[in-house]
Length: 256
Length: 249
Image 1: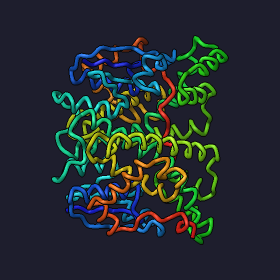
Image 2: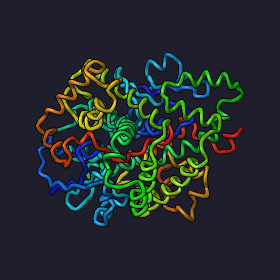
Image 3: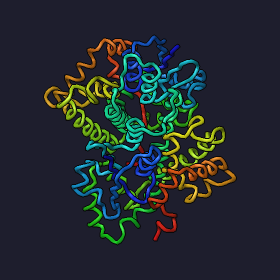
Image 4: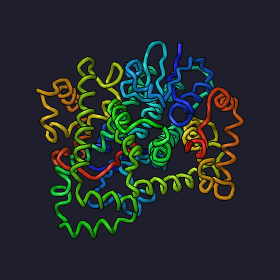
């Protein structure tokens, strides 16, 4: 029995939804509107005291953190593997997952929040009402994350996010120039980790990611998006295009 | 054929990979780099690790970077006692602990300690010499951290937040070790290897955080770690992190 609590199928929620669909596992999808702070409801805080989403419940136990959640799924349900069969390939997957967790995810999220978050994402709330709603969040880390996001990100922070994204895009394009997939010889959890952030970029950073600038990464992105499992995962949201909404988080690595 | 590039004194990233190799009984060639001479920024090492970071493992001519990923690779690729639990739930738990130790606790400790030791580390070099060295640090985040520590420009609020996180992590670690001899489940794993290398020296550096009144189970765990043959060998073959007094000389 698998219950997945998730938001729109972008970012971390997208990673876990795609992994579940790729493995062909039956699960019940529980949509959590993180822009309405539903992750801080008492029944969810009982499962994760910090209100983390995505969150998977399997046999009564809760699992969080997309990288380890996806590896758990692959190890607990071995059919349709998403990790390479050789040790070198698995190391490559973990290096990509770490790059996502160490900065690519946070940087794309910051740029997306700046572009879409404040105005469109929580558009129903006036600035004053947003601040009041943030102060009602029952988790300290959650309040801090949202206070910073509601106040708006500074230019220095956005410039750092842009340069981190630029570095990551360079690596992705270089890898895909000589290989079809990010790690090993086949589609893997590395592709699953990068895609739900990369998919934002042609709209968000058109000067950086386009058919002209990054042709190999663009055709990789289209190949991933065309996979039946990915199409099913992307249909689990409520908005037409999940890559035009954003929520604050995760945190950037605090010391280089 | 296995080679390991690392820094002395052994702790954090270099130490965990060194210890994982010893626990598995893998024979390897030591390639020590002198951090104070900035040997990790020389072209011959940048050809091995383009980010200029340690450790790097070479196995049969192939290059492996990133401490956490190297440790899993070592357990994956070599015979010897398993360093990860077999149960998928416990593996998930181990990986979360490793992430927490590396990213939350580890980065907080790194911020605090770099701010203490970097001025002594660069020694009598002039500001211009230091700036020239920093320009050679390939990773922009690492360069920024170095510069902040060197110029003592880390915002006090960020240092305070790191202190708060280290204290919170210490409570979390003590709670885990109160119920079990090892960090995850009933068996020794990569989470213990990481914690020993990132955190055990806090007992010496910060007795106000780790002591027999507040964290008796953590101290008992450090004692169990030091009895392990691989940890004895680690300490015999390398220098352990210096005391604060030594760092300030």
